[in-house]
Length: 308
Image 1 (cartoon, rainbow, N blue to C red):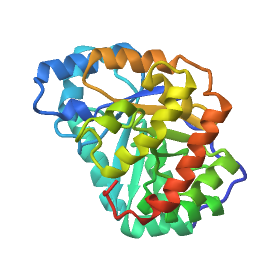
Image 2: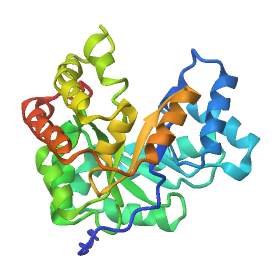
Image 3: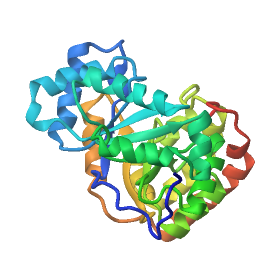
Image 4: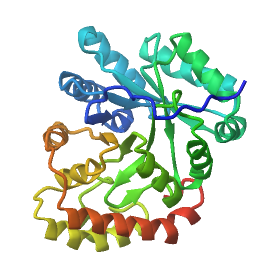
């Protein structure tokens, strides 16, 4: 069987506007108890979490936090990866077991090999995903996108294969990064495909990325910060976090943004910014959009995997 094309995107889950990213919970340099306390603070905020078994011992930290307050276990987006359906099922087990859970709310599809090809062409993977959902192992799915993987989701979404099975796309989206290639981005905009924006603040304030040696983990980010800093300064927005969230939510199809932190004050800043509903000034948003189109053509589409 192949996927059935529908006429409109499925309605994605009701994500919280800010989703707590758990990458830093897996940092073994930080005391385990402090990381559990940080997880509890995010749980108390009532937001969704984004996690993966790839994030150090983050799942063990989460399990400890969940055990302390079962009434406030958050809804989760969890990375599930593989080249075959057997790989995908194994990754689901790798996440469920450490968490002590029986079901993932949303699986972030990180597909390769055979599954990526089937996703592109409308093949059997869609029936397998429907089966996983019917079994109650995963409540829904969102599709991961990187610059070096944009071709397959572009073809899939153009043909409508994911509609009714995959609820949204998820990729880095902040003032310095837009990891969907221009052609895929145009399809997303045209069809208003729901998006989860990752890496809310691009790792650090724009002036830090521009001016502090080593703050930008790749040279391209430092160069982009040089271009974005004047735009930020002209915007009149006082805080980088607010600026980034207003940028992301300036696109009506963006449902949520994922930001990671191990500091309670940063969490409070994320939560406060998520309550801000005003878009950026139209000229500011347009200038950033234009920069991202140029960057995508100049750099992103030429990037080797994991070099950005």
